[in-house]
Length: 299
Image: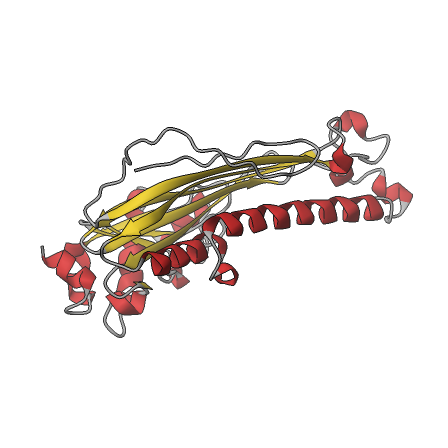
């Protein structure tokens, strides 16, 4: 069952107003007997509380567990909150962590704007007049940019798998700090409802798995990009592929394991984040026996 919790954005004074909406059925599979709810927060803050000036905008859309028959719900929600907002938020509710996240986001924006105002004339005047980072367009090159940029960020989560005592959770962030391009990151977690822990690679794979898994990942990258060797990948915008290692940023489902390498890890920002799916039949020899994932691979 879902109950929406909605935040009403205010321009001048950030005040949280929560309202209950009509309940509706969850579209997340219930195989693990976990009930989910939703949280939606959206807020905009203008510099100096002036709607004519730049602003920062933050939107948070989350699903989160509210009941579970397989794991203590307080433990599960605590773990969920730490996955999304970090270990420092352990022990507080998801709503409290979200509000703290928004407050910190606004504080950093104010500080960035303050630094911009203090430093934009620090350079030599002749340098400032020719430095394109100080202007919004070529037409404005006669004076330094006087207004700070607008920021925006969206933070969402998705349950990608919810069966066989495992929940795969993906946290996606899209942020923009005034440039033409937005920066997208994916953080992935696999929660084992039996142990109450987040699975690590060492929980899944046998000792010494890295070299073999590295070769599998490289071969997947080559095949996905339709090339035959690493030098061709480098021409496409990849780098450091020879040193690529499993990055602990993975999801589990009934068919295999998916690694996601965010932009900038081994590829230029212009390339979409590489998504490497590896079916169980290709890594069964690397799986640690009698673990939840090993049993899933044997089904």
